[in-house]
Each structure stands twice: as C-alpha cells, then as structure tokens.
Length: 94
Image (cartoon, rainbow, N blue to C red; front, side, top):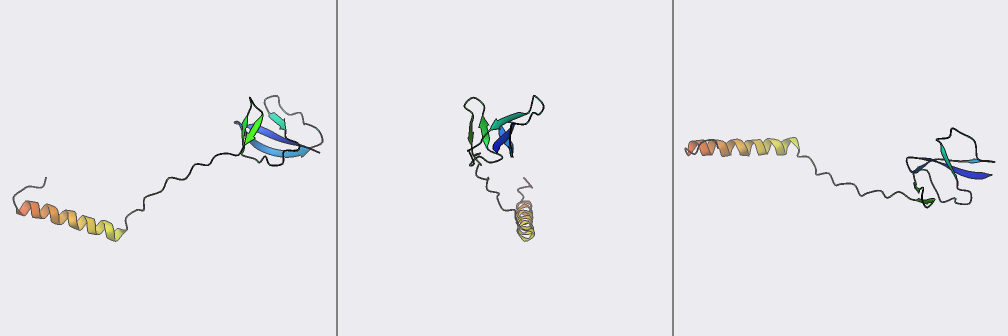
C-alpha cells in the first residue's frame, strides 16, 4: 500500500493510502510519500525541492485585558471631576 498527499495551496491537504496513484483531474497534485510517515496534513510543501516541513505557527499576540465596568465608571468620574475643577478655576473645559 502506497501513501499519497494531495497538495493544495502549497500544503499537504489530504493524506491517504492506495495501491496505486489514482487518476484525478489534471489540476489535482498528488505526491507519493510512501515511507515518509512523519508528514502530516497541513505541512508546507516546496514544489522545487519536493520537501515537506511542519508549519511554523507564530506566537499569538497578547491581548490587553479590557477594563471592567467599575474601572470605566471610576475613570469617567475622575474625568468629570477634573473638568468641573477646571471650570470652577476659570480655566475652561479644554
């Protein structure tokens, strides 16, 4: 039994076993990967070298925590007090 990988968008899209390479539409690319059991679906494929490599998954960008409702209310209160104080001092609302 042979092992094949369908290549789609320069990646191993589908890996399957068959006795012989099946005949599909001419635009479907199949690569014989018999004996290369480490290759997995989703791996990158280099057409020039015929090599497969595990995809490099970038580190996720840390997400800054959102303020709580209480924190937003406190900030609004501080901003309001600041503007009232400026107005009372005759400095305007700028």
